[in-house]
Image (cartoon, rainbow, N blue to C red):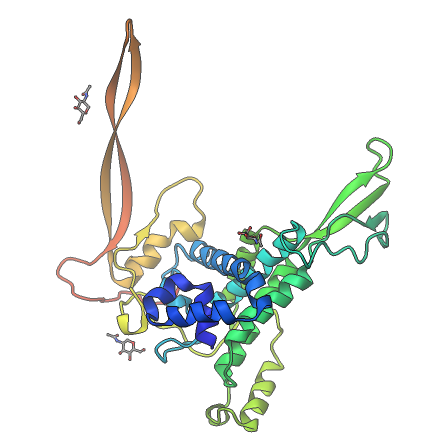
Length: 354
Ligand SMILES: *[C@@H]1O[C@H](CO)[C@@H](O)[C@H](O)[C@H]1NC(C)=O
Ligand SMILES: *[C@@H]1O[C@H](CO)[C@@H](O)[C@H](O)[C@H]1NC(C)=O
Ligand SMILES: *[C@@H]1O[C@H](CO)[C@@H](O)[C@H](O)[C@H]1NC(C)=O
């Protein structure tokens, strides 16, 4: 069942990955619970916005949120639980919650609206609750119903995924802002009404990227962990989880070497990846991308020039022609390439899975 829910969000992947499931998918859509269908398309939009944000956040990292990383559930029996998978879970859960909450405030959905439960009450010194507070409880509930349902297992991986989904949803809440409007005579602003508003999804992505950097590895008792499905296992998980705040991302396995290509686990490696070196508005993280993606992975940086010719400096001649010149513009791209005479990766300074 989990496949079908998942494929519904990420059908573009499943189409390729799981041929033969399409028929069952359609079957589910026709017979599935009505409530499920009500939100399904918005949930899908939300999950996709999570994935888009993942690709943006990791554009200059060795791991760049490749499509192969996007199966949120079992796929070919392979299911990792790395720092990066924790991010995928969190950003997807956050994306669904964010989209559904927005839908709600915009009046897209019949059965929810703004959260006006506190309107009219005093919020603090000089301000009252008013206006349209985003109804995050609704978005949170739908995100739980749809994404947490993918985790049907009782094992530690499922528990970790659920924890990270929750951390993603907490990020949506943690980044909410209070927006206020002044009332009263001219600019005196003696009385304000305020409401709680979602941050832009970009801000939630930035927040979760920081959490990704701080993610904690769960060191679980191996013997007890193997006892899948048993009460013993649940006790072991409860012991381990109890000490970690719900807002933090967690993982079970160290990340593989993202420099290297390993198709059996869906890794493309960094050969052929673009990196950036110069540019005024680059962050330090971006400016170091060639070092991180190429040099530290045993690759060199290759400059690629492409010339684009387009018409320019057009002049109008009496009467009635237009004469243009050809201008060529050279764009320079930097790409990681194999060193001459080297096969494979011979790392100079191996470092973490950045
Ligand atoms: C919810 O919002 C998303 C993104 O803005 C939009 O694509 C989707 O159509 C909305 N859902 C409904 C039911 O209007
Ligand atoms: C690919 O990854 C698998 C699983 O981690 C590992 O066993 C295998 O040795 C790797 N293959 C290569 C070529 O590195
Ligand atoms: C501009 O380029 C086109 C196609 O390459 C060519 O036909 C044309 O003569 C060029 N024009 C001038 C002004 O050089």
